[in-house]
Image (cartoon, rainbow over all chains, first blue to last red; front, top):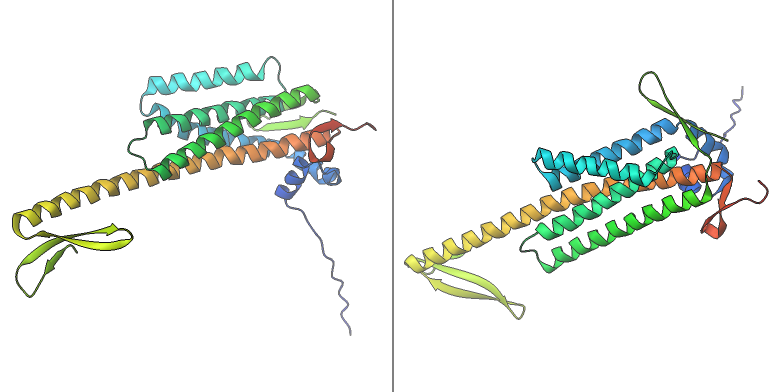
Length: 173
Length: 103
């Protein structure tokens, strides 16, 4: 009795690879991409968590235990986000507006840390400057991306709030 | 390690420093002069260690925040690309996004 076995090699792209290739504009991964977009609530939740964690960490440094300052900064950032997003923004525009504000906050944070630093060495000063440069680049890139997306007039993304409180995102065709 | 004993005759305080790449040991002396110099060095070392520790702690905090902002940028970049592809755009020569002519 012979056992015939067929070896089938299934090459599966990881979600990260698919997203990376999407960023590069590779249309061959559209079917897998549609599956990922169906799971968009998961992605938006991930983006929200990253934003919240980063924002809180920066507020902790820039406002310290001063509750009024912390609240004022937090409200200012929220207002800024609304202003940048503009009237009736799509979900993508909202996410990009959040990224602009987060990058702006990061830039301010980096500048504040540098201004507060005392007795730093040349190496440390160089590290501070590089961090500020990187933060500035990300900030300008975020602005550029939002402007570009607006220019392309992407179709709106519909958001449904599920009963449990989770978000469900559908991309309108 | 800066206190030394030579031929069993008391303790001497010494300082080591680099001169033109070579280590030069300077003899400060015994008794009160040595004690004062040792105390001064210990305070300087402690201050330097505190500064280094504060810098390392701040550096770790900054890197953690930068990682979060960078990670969000990466995920959002991918989501933006995915949305554009889904909407029928393509990247022209890996550069700007353009609407496909056949759509």
